Each structure stands twice: as structure tokens, then as C-alpha cells.
Image (cartoon, rainbow, N blue to C red; front, side, top):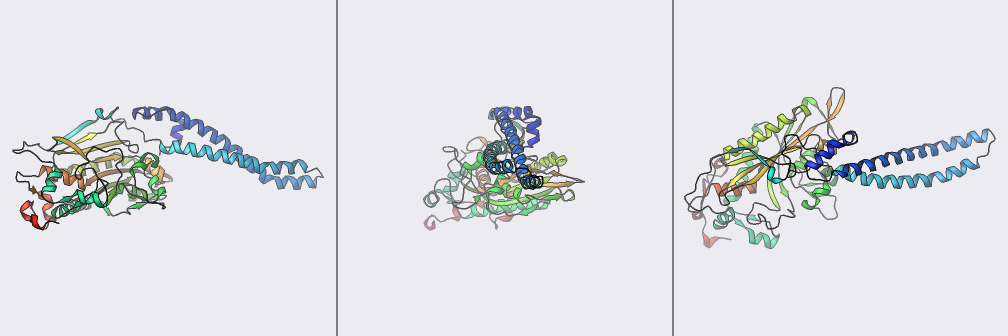
Length: 430
């Protein structure tokens, strides 16, 4: 969340940021009005509580002085009711005030292009897109032809947007995971496998839940949600703790399945395994001091660049516009891989700096000499494996429908260098 004093003392800055995001800036005025009333009622309530606490003293003093205590007794009987009325009003104001406050998005960084998706800016393109000597097939067709995925049976047992991975594509999935974990481990990242469920308080520490609830799966009758990304669980690791400056930065490489409803994306990328309700992901997550925030951003972004180069996937980096990025980051750079069948780049992951937005929500600080300050948090999709599988399959397809395994992944494939039809007997297919 934002610093509440920033909203109180510099509302024009917050309004300007909301405008950049295409959101209503009037919610700042609404918040300030509620905040002012809340402070007034809170002060009145505290004054009445203090008066109630002084009542017994006043009664004793009046008795000693031989004065009537009737008015004091009458007032003491009125106080609980008045306090209760103010407490009810205070609670109502606080609920409305907190809802707006918790849902304010992060401030937009000055380097972010202003506008909608059309203002996204490409800052890097890498890899040569070679002209194929044969018509490129989509990943779904390639996987189905080699009996490497079963969408129909998954739909029968789970519903749309699920899948069974089969045979060597399972090996490829874990090859990608192991490649990314080895890469990040060598970079000094701490490998983490987080819980796959989080309680509401932990989830709210990572993001405004009201804005994302339609994307997240809730466990019925329990205070638990399936994680949509390891980022949220890694952020929660140090919630309500104070870190030591000497220990920063702390860099995690989280590996986990991710679960998302993908609400509102019907009819888009519904075929194959590009956009699904369940997938695996390796996530870079960093806790650091504010002065090192952008240095860490460059570091984790460069890690993504190195991994994509080693996989030899044509890709590009794009700064998302103010209206296209999420509510939590101050700046996001997407990396997109090239898909030959579509002759287009598609999103594989993203790198975001969230400044102290998540740290404030989760109360994560660090000791800075005599004072405690909020850390900065950053996240980066090192690799989302199902999307990466789709991209690799399309870029490494051969004319006969077989799929080459990228050289950097071959050591994880138990000797498999080419995934091909001849390895599978159609009669023995399950």
C-alpha cells in the first residue's frame, strides 16, 4: 500500500498517478474526506473514554466535598451509549476508509509510458527470426500429433483449460525447471518451494485482494487460497519481521505450481497449454534496501535475458504502459517469446519493481542505523514452464513434426535430444 502520509500531504501526486493508470482520481478526495471524519470521531471517542475513566474519581471528590453526584451519575450512564454510537460510526468510517486506502495502486514510475496498451514500448529485441522452409504448426497441433498432451481427458476430469502432459514433454517440463533452478542457484539465489496455499492476511500483504479475487481460487469454508504465483508466498515469508541491513539483499528463487481462474479471458489462447488454470513457474523474488532497488531490478531482468539467450528463443523486452501494468508494481517490463505459427511475440513473463508497496502491506522492515524502514520488493517470472514449452515446441519444430530439444536442456532429458513420432507406437497409445 501507499504511505498514508503521502496521500494526506501530497494528494495531487496520487491523483496524477491514478489518472495515468486511467483510474478515477476523485477516490483520493473521497478517502481524505473519510479520513478527516475518522480522525475527528476517533478523537471524540477517545475523549469520552477518558471522561468515563475519570468518572469514579469525580464521584469520590464530589462526595468528599459534600456535593451532589446526581449529575455525574446521570452523565456516567449516558457515556457508554454515546461511546458505543461513536464506536459504531468509527467502525463504519474505518471500513470504508481502509477499503479505498488498501486498493490504491502503486505510484507510476516516471519512466513508464503513459496510456493504454498501444503505448507499450519495445526496448530490446534479441534473436533472429529465420524463415521456415515449411508451414509452422501451432504448439497444440505438434503436441497432439506426438501424443504428448491430452486436453480432452483433462476436460473430462477437471474442465476447460486443464491438461495431461505425457511422455517426453513431462521430461521437458522438468528439464526447464531444473535448468532455471540451477541457473539461479549459481547466481546465489536461495531455492524456495513455498506453501501452495495462503491465508487471507498473507495474500493481502502481497496485493489488493478485492482487485484480484476473481483470478484466485478460494478453498471453501477455510481461510485459504491457492497461490496464483510463488511471489505472494515468498513475500509473506518475512511478514511482520525486521531484517538486518547486512543481510540484504535477500534473493529467492521460488518454484511452485500456480493456479488462476483466468476469468475474462474466454476465447483468447484457449487452445493448448499457453493459457491454463494450472502451470508451474520459477519466480525470482528480492528483498532489498530502497537505494539498491533499481540495481536489483536490472539484475533479475538480466537473469531472464541470459536464460532466454541460452534457450535460443527469439524474444523482446517491453515496458508496459501505465494502463497495461498491474496495480502493485511501479514499473513492469514484459518479456515475450516469438511464436512462428502466429508470426507474433507472446508474453512469457514479466519483471516488476514494487518499491515498498508490498512491504507496507506485509509490515516488512529493515534496521537502518537507529531507525526502521520498509524494504523494497521485486519479482520476476524466471520461467513459466507451460508457456515456455509452447514456445520451445514451436521454435524447435522440424518438418517431420518432431521437436528438437534445446542444447542447454539436453543434459536434463535422460539422453533425449529429439522428441519424435517414431518413439511412440500408435497401437500402444493410452
